[in-house]
Picture 1: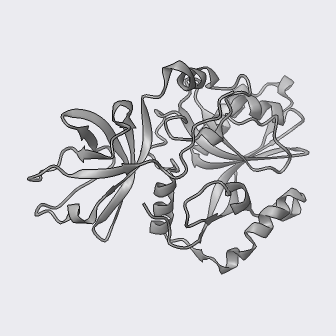
Picture 2 (picture 1 turned 120 degrees about the vertical axis):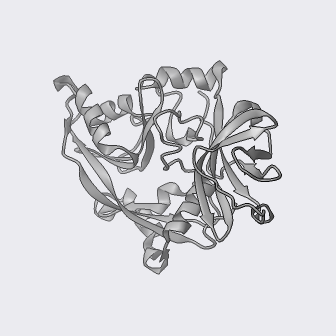
Picture 3 (picture 1 turned 180 degrees about the horizontal axis):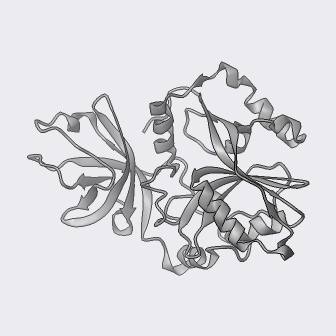
Length: 299
């Protein structure tokens, strides 16, 4: 499942929350999934904001500084995040939450579909003036002006291949980060945080009930006499058994690809059938692990 073909640039504005005060680091450590206490200032921290039951509510990028931290909402409801933080900030926390503002963000989309260089490929406006740490990020993306800005379709194709759960089908308030392969966005060894008890159970003996997979429909399968309609929410079958659900779809020039949540019993399958199609023969999609899917490091 191909990426963008060549490196592209993702450039957009995102909501940003500013927290100030000497207790900011400890507060974010307890309210998000990453090991914030163990991070360096200006380090780009990828983290999740979870519900008390471990359901994913938002994907965050956090940067600490001497006065507090900036929290960029990559996906999810920034107003809900601000309200959630505000409800649990007490005077003893030594934290002050400022109004939401917008932050310009750039990211190099690498054609090999890898997220291992995420920290070097992301830059927020003004990074270079913050610290020496940011200079390496500025250097890595210094050629951004030479990159072509990704089209909406190219960005979506990159997202799908990487398995980045930015869509409403994946980030729907019902999934947990382990199902979505967000192992590098959380820590299992940091101690207590919002949603930690559920995550620990799922990561331990309980295990996940489903996992995110990339899918595509081979070109020859789209040449049926009947027109194909594939949409988010469509069920997947393994024989007569329900095996999962489509969460994202990209249709381009007769080709289809996307993401799906596949039930545990069907995770080893390389193909699953699309339900609800009025075709003479069953239509099967191909499945594979997203390039960015990561299990968490066990403590």
